[in-house]
Length: 155
Image 1 (cartoon, rainbow, N blue to C red):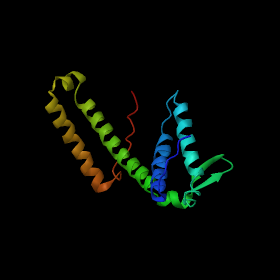
Image 2 (cartoon, rainbow, N blue to C red):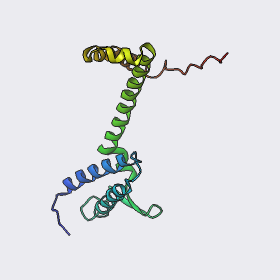
Image 3 (cartoon, rainbow, N blue to C red):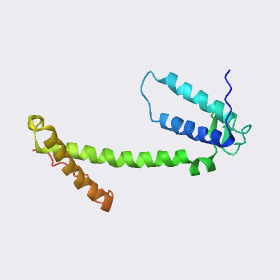
Image 4 (tube, one colour):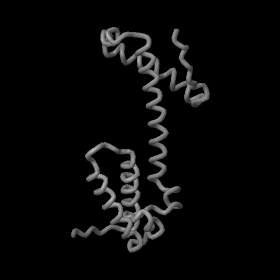
């Protein structure tokens, strides 16, 4: 077994990094990747089990029901890794919404042939114009004016 000598402060930083990675992994559900999940959980459990010995007992506790080491709730709510996760979720939501709405609008306004006939610069300019419209709207009003419009009945 290898031994790594780090300070309490470095250990706290390492736990932040491991918690960030482990939390992010919860969103990864691809088949055949269970080995990676177990490997991450194993490292996380081992580090959290050492927290008290490293002077960081306030950061982790053992959950009997889950049979795993977990971040203490107070620590988690105030942690840098939670701040990173929240920021990533917020940013991903808006970027994905803008991209999907832009793609939808372009697909409604032109055929694939017309799109492909445009040069790269023209495609980029068109995307940026459409995206700007949505960014301006969402920065001012959030989702306040986003509505689902029911389709007209057929016939």
